[in-house]
Amino acid sequence: MIELKNIYKIFNQGQPNEFAAVQEVTLEIEPEKVTVFKGPSGSGKTTLLSLIGCMARPTSGRIFLSGREITSLPERFLTEIRRKTFGFIFQQLNLIKGITVLENIMLPAYPNGEKFSAVKNRAMRLLEVLELTPKANSKIEWLSGGEAQRTAVARALINNPAVIIADEPTAHLDTKLSMELVGTLAKFKEDQKMVLIASHDPLVYESKIVDRVIHLRDGKIEGPPT
Amino acid sequence: MEGWERQKNILDFSLSSLLRRKGKNLALVFVYTLLVFTLASVLFFTHAIKREASLILQDSPELIVQKSIAGRQEQIPLRYLEPIQKIRGVQSGRGRLWGYYYDPIIGANYTLMVPEKQTLESGKISIGQGISKTRLVFPGDTMEFRSHDGMLLQLQIQQVFPSESELIASDLILLAEDDFRRLFGGSREYATDLTLRVRNQRELPTIALKIAEMFPDTRIILREEILRTYESIFNWRGGMMVFILVGALLAFIIFAWDKASGLSLEERREIGILKAVGWETSDVLLLKFWEGTIISLSSFLMGIIWAYAHVFFTSAALLAPALKGWAVLYPEFKLTPFIDFSQVATLFFLTVVPYTVATIIPSWRAATIDPDSVMRT
Image 1: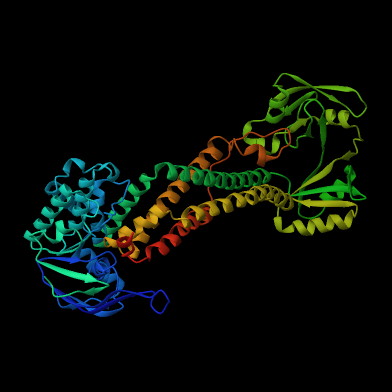
Image 2 (image 1 turned 135 degrees about the horizontal axis):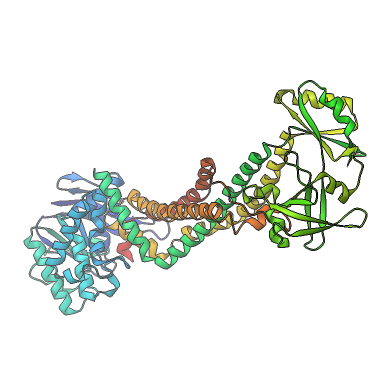
């Protein structure tokens, strides 16, 4: 369970270009459900996801993760929570070029201090599930769009996180690949993971796997949740 | 155990990260190795040559007495020897004959000397390897000299000195007293200088003082002073090179700084990704530290090993002409392998540390960026 209490995120505070990306957001997100944040560009979806995912701190308000207040935690603990609790699928995928698919997938696990062989085995299993095994030693730049997308998914799963955060995951995908991704998200739900998605793609928010859609506009939650 | 695995995993990633930019990093390692190689070669060479010179000079006389008139060296009368030998503490003394001879054929100066211990037959000479190589003369050949009165003097080469003694003896010719006097003229009552053996080193200053009082027209040279002069000559030569190399070092630091401070957009983006997927600032710094260390340490080790092989196996083939400075007659000799670890440590701190720091600082700046920056690009 994630709880947000009166969250504000203001950029360039006190300056003429001050801008409130998120305002007055109070929200409870249930575990094992798929929640979509829907709204036009600039409505604060990405900022809200980065606040929930411990990538940034709110300007005010508090965030609770399984009852534990995380907003005031020092950077080190936030990083650890981010690494162990959240798996991220970025809009731009953000894979590292020049290294292999396998290495990209293993990256988030390196600082854990686990045995290399254990991490590698886990990565190989993920590659198998996502039908990427033949590409394990291929470099990122040689992948097709769908393969790169699945690599990003595998990387998000390497630390077996309880929450998957996906920011506009279908923004650069065609319909077929988008449908494929929705299928993958459905699997996460089956695996009892909480899935948070920022999207304005009807293929995503109208999908039947979605449990809840939260509308955002100008950084605020709009109307009752659907 | 966890910490160790983390180090291993991050080190592993550093290696594959370096391999991604193979061309750039190999070029960097090459330049770096070359710099360490040059610096280490100069250090090893000057140190070994100083050591060699001091070992050879250990056998030279403790005291040399020269006569000087108006500050110039003159021939010294052999009658000075008797009263000097009577000074308490002086073990033995003798007149020494030596001088310089300019050979117009190769444009080099030879040092001619009548040997102290061995006696040479009249008409025979022993020569240094430098002369043998430059003039292409070998045992059995004869060399011609023009004497003080314009006569030609033919002397037969009996021996070429073994290469071990080349440092000092490269330009040396040993000849018999009669031949020396025929070549340079001068009375038999005189010698070039007097050499004295003294048993107790502590008495040297007292003896020197007594000689100076006895013969105020003499100049007394202690062996220690010669050693010091040699030391300073080689230091000066080494110093010159090191001074030039400081320039190279500075250029390298600028190069390293430029390379490291100008983190490319791609590198900054990667640091952002690592932070976003859960790497801490310290993990990113560890990665950059390992990257810098791998480059600098491997270059350092390669440079040191190459320099060692260069100085001690090839007799510093690349540096010798610049550092030995024997004008035309370059001595060729094998240096005894010897490494001063404090010098190696100094070199380490001059090369490895600046590079590693230059790599870490800009990465640290990049590593403190907010992880959510990658969500916005």
